Image: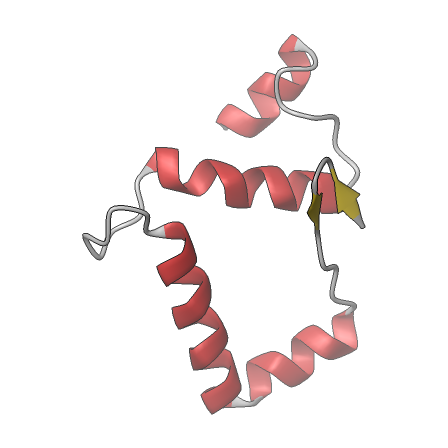
Length: 78
């Protein structure tokens, strides 16, 4: 799936189940995503650092882009 200039990978339910049940792979996946989002490397994710992840999830779910309407902005801010 394409999100502007970025490609968003969408996993189906069986792939997610496989990922979660493989502890080593899941841990590596989570660690990688955390490091990717933790831009200031303080070991915590701020709201500002989470914005790109929330936008990707919204795009994968078919939600309108943040900033496209007051309704979509409310969804993202919640």
